[in-house]
Image 1 (cartoon, rainbow, N blue to C red):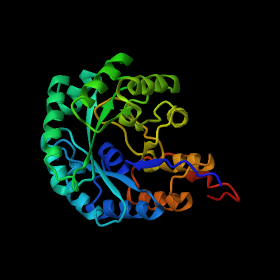
Image 2 (image 1 turned 45 degrees about the vertical axis):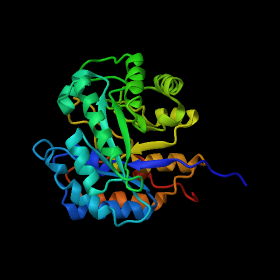
Image 3 (image 1 turned 90 degrees about the vertical axis):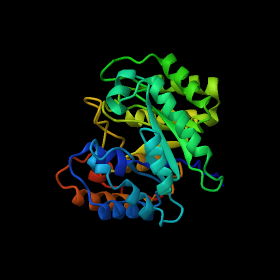
Length: 309
């Protein structure tokens, strides 16, 4: 019997989705959403970000959400932090995975986190110091997300050698791994292959295992297919396609989790996620956010007659 290759679908809706909309979801509703997805088989969820509530009031309760979500068994609680202060708060809350964004486009970095590359590298060093002070049993996985790696809506083309060089710089600091983020949805499969193989050649394949792709220009799932062929094992997505970067004009359109799970399971990959239950969750969460735009094809068309996992 052939063993199915496992792919980790990392749900980012409670962070990336909610930070990009005007509605502020109550803490109890966020925890309900997280619990519903966990019950479907989702095993990694980015539940929020430790940013100033003045900048993103949608994320003001992230510490409370982390603590509540920690009650769910076998669930990796991921969060995003912009700096050392956020990293410290994430550690105190008990996050399992911490990601800090480093925009390859310096203009976007200044817009997004108000830091130059030099300042962000210093923040990452300080975060590493905090991570290393944690006990081995409670040490969160620390990742740097290379934002705007495929292009920037402000600067335009981002040279690929800049992405690879920046990846090497942060990995040399001792960061566990980097992730490739198509923040603006400008990427294509050939470009993705060049970036992935370029970083692997310089840093090793174990230092880049996940990608965060957007469907802004309809290339999301095409890029996923190339990532899978290359051997990438973690794919970020958002329920109903909610989200995008509020500091990159026109950067909307996360990959739809329901569509991604259907694609992967149809191709014989093992996500551990029940697609039919996931569609039910989407319908429930959509009722909690009735004024927001929702996307995706699988939920609208339904699963094919006779389709089984």
